[in-house]
Length: 165
Image (cartoon, rainbow, N blue to C red; front, top):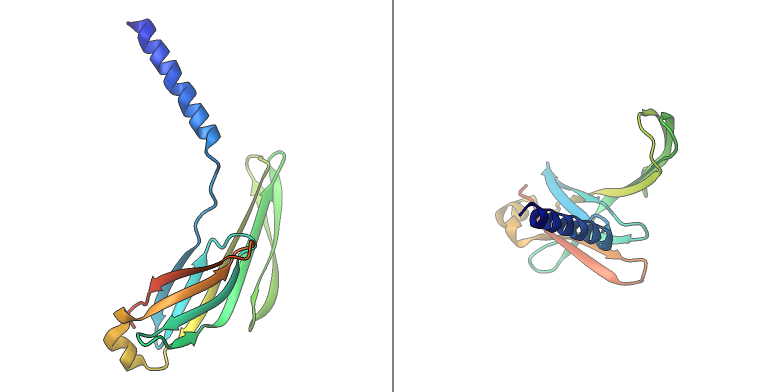
């Protein structure tokens, strides 16, 4: 009985290891969120894959009219580590079409070493609500669209519900 149980346990372990090795790590899916503040919608698009271009962020009313986003700002962070534990340095930049580009440097201490590099990018923007009363009375019929283009040239669309004002 112990011999059969040992064989089954070994088989399960081997299958688990093979399954872990066979499945490639997928990048996180791009996510978008919106909130309302005064008469403005605040947007944030997280986990933008490298090479993906955000073409437009628009508020679409029930009749199909569009209000484009303004004050777009893209933030890119790249961190890497390698070798043994010790002090580390990070370099990056934030900025957008209206705010300019602001470089930054961060210092830290690495408690354990690894050879890993991570890059993350997110975008923030605002959409003014031109007709706040009309929006408030039927915001459930409105939507926000994030239009993008992948590095391969394929266009995509991410749609989210408009938040209450």
